[in-house]
Length: 374
Image: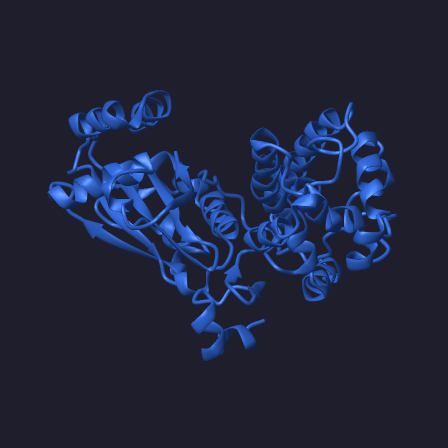
């Protein structure tokens, strides 16, 4: 990974450079689900793809569910533990709740069924099983598993099948849930701070009447009053169809003198890999922008596909310049904020598409996901 899949020969067959990839006598394929589907189709007698169109659709339903409802939160939970992504408590807590929700749904589904679709193992079981394997090995300890007896029974039934063992081997269930451990350097610094002896108190100064320190005002609070009520706009946007209702409301009320409009682009799109990780990156950026929330509104969108995606969007911000509280956000240097003219027809059309997450702007790409800062 990172070498073989970058070679000229590999890219001539698999232009996105994705791993895994499949090369057969009559085709080349990338994307693991596509490869699995092809292999499962080679022998109809296995029934892996379903006995009829309804069963086939249900199998696809679980494959999509695995990609969208299991893999992203799993990565958000275990990623910081493995050092793949920075630790963020809110992200981890949400990921744990999302996984519990999926497990609860599967537990209900499997309360009256041996397998997910029909009476025999299908590609649905294989896909969901593989997506849950790391969780069962690293994070689902006995206390966690006890809430989902039907899923456990199904998982162990599959794990003990000869065909599964031949590929995956023996699966050892988690005994102690893996936990995030801060880097040693961080621990050491905290320890050293605790050891520091308190500084001796300075000699008391002559009695004098002390004036309370004035709280430093945010420069944006000192700007002339704007006719555009940002909170009213956020509520209207949240509670109405974006096109045409919210769009019409925005242009009717927007104050281009009191606010500025900015096109936002991530600087390192060529380094982005999985689309859900790109969306998590946006979420982390927005969390660290909390101080800006009462002064700004915007959206950042992930477009493209895994290993070939981009982050871009639009913001409106109180005042005519980028405020200091945004510049101080650690992620800010990774983004380019370009001031645009909100009266420009092209800008207006693009802004409308971005806040709606659809429209002509995205005709040559796919809107995968995104987040709204409001």
